[in-house]
Image (cartoon, helix red, strand yellow):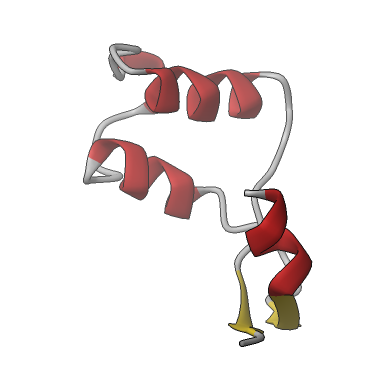
Length: 66
């Protein structure tokens, strides 16, 4: 993970939070209210815990240096 992070360069980040993207990744949909979602996997728990604590996620685009 650290090696990837060292080689990745962020090119563009959307200006506001995109909290639905990690929810869609972890659960496959955004149709179910957050308070009714299961916390079965570590990823699901991490996403919901982060949002419950008032955190946000941002979406960006970048490139991976060879």
